Length: 158
Image (cartoon, rainbow, N blue to C red):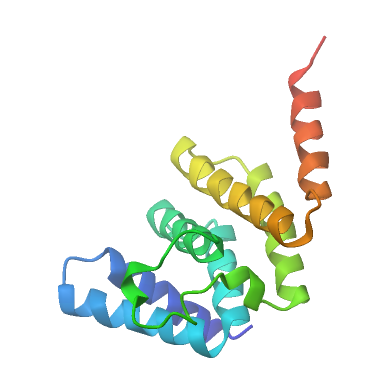
C-alpha cells in the first residue's frame, strides 16, 4: 500500500465534504478514476481510512458510506452514472485477497469502541458485505456469525 496514494484519497474525501463545488466534483472524479483503474486499491484504501483512529469521524463515516454503496448490488453511484461498468457491484470486481481483507478488517473495526454514528455506518457496511457474500455464494458469512455470538455472549453476565 502506497502511503502517498492513501493520503491522496484521504484528501479527496475531505474535498468531497468541502464547500467548494469545483473541488468536490474534481475529488469525485478522482475517486471514480481510481475505482475504475484499480478496484482493489480503491476498496483497500477506503477500509484503511475507516480503520484509522487518526482520521476524523466525518471522513471515516464518509468512507464507510462510499464503500457500502459501491458494494451494494442495488445502489447506484450517482456521481458516476455515465459509466455502467464502473458503477457495477464493486464486490464482484475485487480479488479474493481484497474481499478477505475487507471482511476481516470490517469485523475488526466493529470491535473498536467508537461513536454511535460511526458504529451505525460500519454496521451498515458489514450488513451490505454480508448480504453480498450471501447473494454471490448463497452461504452465510461465518466469521460475522461468530462475532455476533461473541457480542451476545459478552452481553450475558449472569
